Image (cartoon, rainbow over all chains, first blue to last red; front, side, top):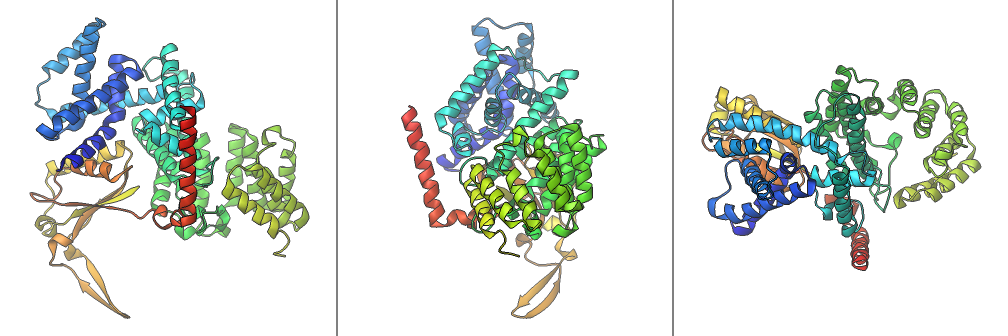
Length: 422
Length: 145
């Protein structure tokens, strides 16, 4: 291997190991900045050693051992070494290299627990939602500040500062490095799932900029979700969320037209839906249901997505089942957006007049005041009822409310097309 | 990005020699690592080419040719589909695979075409727009420094 190839390969290894390194080092330092620095030191050490010695057989273990030794050195220097650390130090020094496989397996489990703890920390409610997202992408997704900045169309220094501040907030709040138990766990897990879903949605329904879809963020979120599903396999909602993301992603290709414009669900070429992701999503949903989680917020949304995924043609969609699922969702997590979606489902199952009646009840809902999909849905129902003039006004209003350039164009086109088809 | 990791066939796989128990257990633990890392989308092993067949096209003509096929090194014995961030990442994971087919094995890594490879991203108009956006971000950063 040539030198540049080797250093590329070392950086790739380090990026694979980075989240586990940071998580594993947290038990020594209890501090994110310290752990990140130590992980960085381990990379520097690898870049020094490996060109001479070759890449070790278990590079992840090498990096971890190197970083742990440095952590212990630091602790010894600062005399913060308590008995527990002393013991870890002795284990580290004494561990013979026999039974390597067994030891690796044990370490894997240990690291897994550490990764889960790290996820609970980066998604801690003490942080703002932006900070949670950024820190999770940085430490668990292994993205650099530059990559996060590119994904969120933000300047790099903003992201860097957000990371620094988030770490400081966690340190000041003395957030412990542990997976919560008991009643707190459900709430904290909901926060972790919320962060992952936020990343996914930012990728899937880009709220800013000219793109309708930023697939890299969807992939990052899916990966975090898949990792979490292995770390907390007993949690039904984790599988519900994974199912929802897999099923939603399965439509990504069909959702963008040749000019980059959005194509709505009912108009999509279903032949372009990704059957691999659909089967993965259905399997994850089955897992959530088998764990008794069919009525979870994410599992219900996944079940709705599954109804679409299983309809070979748009006209085969089981809208009555979708209405029933929205009923359950609205009872569990009432929100005007869910009500709006439910109204659309009702219009598909029972006709546009029934849908319009429900949509009109939402017209005065303050939470939907600036929400472009309300006039868009109303416009659609009015058009189906043959009320072209009113429909046109609604589409124009929807266009004025969206911040997404691509979506705006589609809405303006629909406004212009009102009445023409009839 | 998605990558297909192709396990090339060997004399052993073509002879239908089943992997040893140790091999299977190593492979199982490797697959577990791939799943835990969140990169494994799918994967499977294939029967030897003696169980396979080809459809050969010549203009409008179609001919079916039954296996086995001679060119062992060109055949495949299995595959994975991974979702990774880069080819470098995929290569590092591939290096961690237990030697899959006996003494001399080959894994071939082939990235999938992505929408961005031939989508609208490649029209000059949009590329210009993206460059403009990147420039805006850079200026924005410079202004804040």
